[in-house]
Image 1 (spheres, one colour):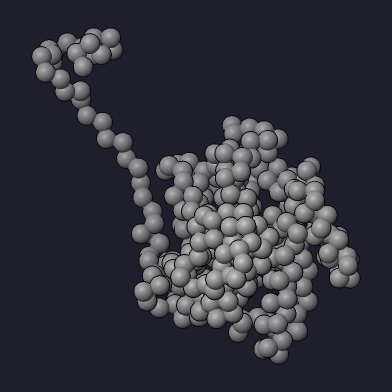
Image 2: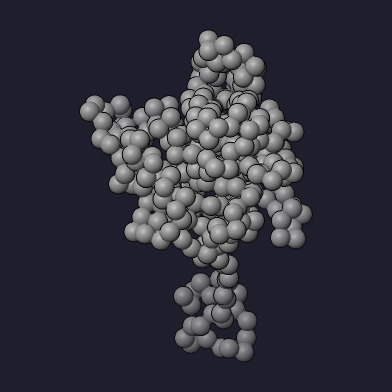
Length: 331
């Protein structure tokens, strides 16, 4: 997945905060599924470039967590070889350091967060370590919302990708004017999986009712090394500008790509500099076009209502009750 991660990073970080909003100061960047660290380092480079272009001076600190021992080691070694020892110290990983079951930065808040979490991967082991579906008390995943003091964001154990997003939302800065910006890559299941009241649906409801979702960008197919599935960048912030409040922008960037001369696994295309700029311009212009649609938050919500009616069968006596066995016979 590493080949695609860097390509999706640039539009993510450029969308993370408009260049004109970047001020001189210190910024903390976080990736809860950092792999070899590609997204973090490209995000850091892009942030520094944008700051320099606007005459700002910024310091950056990288934080990441990775469960895979090999990719964690590569990430750590890469930062050490670049002379970034402090950043290397902030990369936590290995099999015992699952982001979902063992948060390495429970008290940290970050300016920029971006991630490409695993899709369709079971997190059953993490769930058991957290106390099971009925015993989980982690404040990242059981919150207070809409009058419910135990509002559950716990998804099905077969796919934990939405929990990586919930984890990042728990780390948004609350006491600063800029707040935080998040960009996370998901597959299509995050858009619709989970019935009303289930974890996935509850996460989407929580996000939309708090007005955090700015945009979802549909990326071209075959963007990643090991899968050809459709992928989407979710862009979120807890400091929406006034003109975006109460609305969500959907951007269709599926036709904006450059074919590769030689495939890398299933990856046969990439975003050119022009494609990246086009995505960023579409995001920042915030206008309705063929590739950009803007909807009110209410358009994404629904209630599930169960309507029950009396059983209607021919030849029955409406004045007497029937046993389940009798009803089965009548059917």
